[in-house]
Image (cartoon, rainbow, N blue to C red; front, top):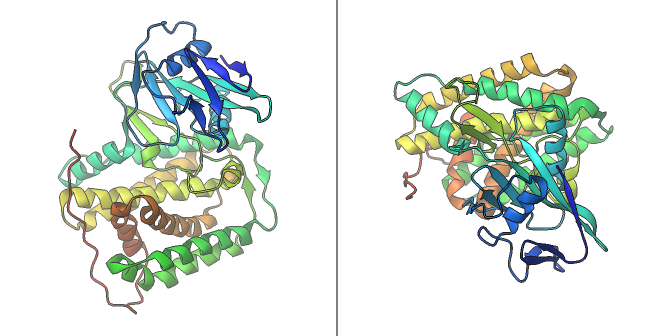
Length: 393
């Protein structure tokens, strides 16, 4: 069920919300937060079975929007900025209409009809999955366990099937890309590589410069591909966007894998994020994330271990095989785009680390070092994982 609120200021629960000059959605002078009753009031607008005193609990991650667990059964995502959830709500609603169980169940959205800004999504309400863990945790746990003698993870094929079904729904209205698309893709990726090279320093920088030629070659290949087709893809697909929760509700012990966060690539401007793109970009991002999991696993084990990337090779193969077998329209994926998009994503990970999370550099550095041959023009040391520092609870 959806709901619409109207006005320059709207009252939700006991709070008046407004949009400031910078586009921020505020309750007074602060962002909405767990415990202020706003999320609960929003949940009640789309689900009248939510109790008037249902508890609110914050999802404690740093994010653009504010997500709150209400009554231990719903998640309310309140936008931090005007229009920040329009894309996600539209895609989730489309997937819900198709009966998809590959994403968290869409309960409803609350829209805000503003007299000067138009209509936009204020909040998206989805199911809460008790015990759910994000992929940067469960995937690394599984790979470390496998390297220590445990079973081979089966989930790369499961994820390939799920992404294929999601693309099948979102790609039903795929359109032909413009003739200029190949050149534009190559230009965007080349810009990302140049930016990463400017920022490169230390041992990671030396390894990147020694692999510049190989990365650039894959990126240039984008310019000679066909325009293909495009549609609204996930845009920021990686293992961290997959929740694993215990049980499937069908009486089995098999875990459930749920793809989340359809807001698009946070490193892109809003208009770029909204634009349709090739399915291969989602696939390339997921394949790169398997390499990043391999790097994190080696950090966890405190040693460089070639078996981690051997696992990643198998995971990539299993994911792609499953995707090919289950995507309803084989024309959606142009595999010729994968090498260039993967190279772009690897250097984009370096840029992200430089801007927001310097301790993350080691992961894309490891993947680039493994995937691309060195010219040995610059002295470099072999890649080794940094010290592992457990996160305290």
